Image 1: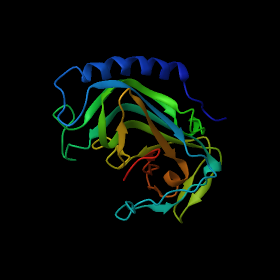
Image 2: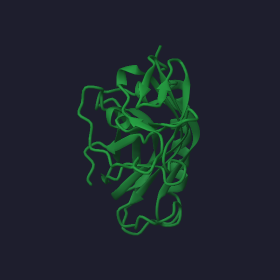
Image 3: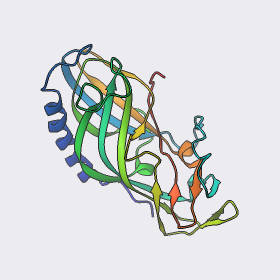
Image 4: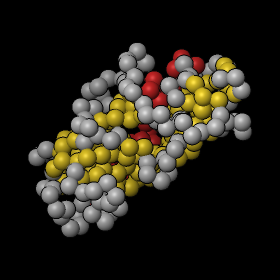
Length: 230
């Protein structure tokens, strides 16, 4: 049985992020940006039938059985969301959060299933609500932890690694706890506020997977900004 989103927990998350985001914007005004306006960060998933975007070959230096996982065999991809950060377009990539670079939306960690996100583009699940300054942004990144993959069907990956059903496999996300999962896409916060819509690409995420000899899975969740600019 597929694990569903804990909507009560995510509802509490939205309230926490509202206060945190407002607090983050009460400091000095960031050069190149306008006044803070209401913003909601939402996420939906692309849907299993949609085409997957190209994914960089980041697995080239990883040792293990490599391949793809059929979406139909996956019950859930559980993640704990730690925080969300956005990068103003006027800042350089190397900027640190809270020091004129990345703007951090701190939140209480919340655990949910990426595959239980809605597929409707106009009904994304709210991850965060608060305020951000008006202006252009170059990137969004999400910091996650305790990622776990659950399957409903066993299968063999490559020639060496066998996945078993009903077993929670710990997932390692490359640089996930250091630089976060980046969208590498920009967006604009208009006067009056608006939504930052994130899209989880499940097929692209499962197209490059490595299974290690100690039972750990390595994959990189693919998240983009809906209508975002490269």
